[in-house]
Image (cartoon, rainbow over all chains, first blue to last red):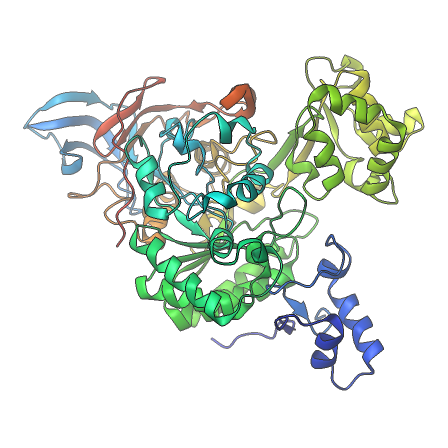
Length: 68
Length: 555
């Protein structure tokens, strides 16, 4: 059985900052826009978590919006 | 002659085959014979006429690690027919643990299990650091069988100390974790548990959440040497993340040839596509050969709480937890302090708790005013001109904290939807959380509820299928050797129950934890007798002195 397409994600590298992750995940975007996108696609990290935005090694970080 | 002969029962062997009227002969802790009119007689004969005779039930997701140190029966799980339990879930086990890390782990256990502090100071002596020594500490007094997981968080803590909750591990540290895990598996651990959700008493993520995927992959390589289980707690509140976790588990399962399981998975009207999408992905990955088992519990989650003690309800509100951990007189003073109360209300969010607390129902309790019972907090708050979080505090103070609230139907909320899901061959029935969340809800009786709600009431499962889902299926998934079936040579873990009445009792508070600590429990209904390794451990409403529980041998 072929795997259906699912939302793409990455996981943080050791000690990786949001800026570095955004640059790696969205290399074609301006850095500020890439950061904004990563924040918006990952509310479980950047809105729901306390402390907000704490990036953990085990995180699933989506690199695209939800699939329609 | 048999040690025990069970006569005239409706035998359900656990394999899914149709029930037959038969006798079961037991000798030296094992099933010796099954058949009609067994002739050899028994030193003790049990008449099971009109009752079902089935294998003992297996609970694959529990947190009885601490309770087992003073209660080898994991009460009241055993009286519900549960003869084998798997503790150590969610990245937390009591071993391996260095003496200097005990305080750290206690904080995490208190957060998740809601055990009173006295449970860690008065109820037992810390005699172990290694996994094998913890095993020795519980093994002699068991009435229930135990297949313990080892927690990823404690493995990190052992190797990295305080850094376990700060950073990624270095290659040498990962290698040390691999060696430690190997020691635990050699000492009988059934697998490794990890969590992507849990937090400690300060709401800081538990150590396992700081691990890179590469670290988990390295630990799974060790699981692969033994063919043992990886259990995870996924971000169950988000389907996309859950599917990402399923894909990670599938890769680990295929690469290391290990079984994996994720728990819990919930279905409710707010996210009706969650389980269908999750199961569709499981089906795809299963077709690739991956072993990924989603655990679903049978019951909805109804959290009851008051401000008398900490509760799971406040898991994401550390400022509330901090206040609720104060002694009662200090807690009342703090809640009466306007600045403290303002901060608590502010911490709930800009809506004053409307979303989180507005639908809470006043459950009652010793001092609850009758005219408030059954009403929502949002309704009462509006009437009083307060936001719900403020009303929660003021109502509690007005009633000496003796007023309880109910957050109903968390998790599942529809029997008609859940029944077919539980019957699905890809679904592993579990996630009871037995022994955890003590002051929030009862984690006992899920098996009785399976029969009453999904066999008798909705008919989603036949009696034989329901028994199979909680006996031979979990035994096979977890590799519990010679358990989970009524079969010659298998361990004589047996439940005798009335199929027309088996159920869970009403949820009620009891104060039987160390230091008089409170927990919610449910009594069993319709369970006549429970045997563990050939000895009667519970019969006719009472526990016996049998301590024949074992650390489960693994296939």
